[in-house]
Length: 163
Image (cartoon, helix red, strand yellow):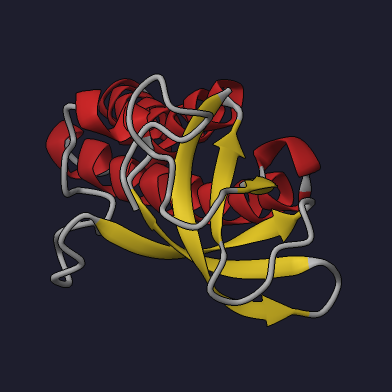
């Protein structure tokens, strides 16, 4: 599990907490820095996220967060892999079979199939993303309330970043 620390900013019904967190440690090694929206809206390295409040944290508490690496890898595969595969499959099918089926030129068929497959993939990403986000293994969890003062340096408890 990857750990990060955060501050609880709001409590919600059903055992959920809204936390303001620095990016998870695995974000530091990501080659798509900023592409997830972290820097697009001036977030400057922090984000607000809903997390399952398993530790009973209260507003203002510093907490340790966990997210399973499998969840990140699966999500990345769905988000990037499905559209990429759809683009390749759509262009190939359109270029080779499209002219016979549609009576259009090879390039026009490839473009039309590519667009259709990409649209279908984006809808699939949206639907699958919503399904995955309901699974407990794909949700951020508040696992521990940290002592006041943060504890947050490397080797200092479960939190790898300073809050």
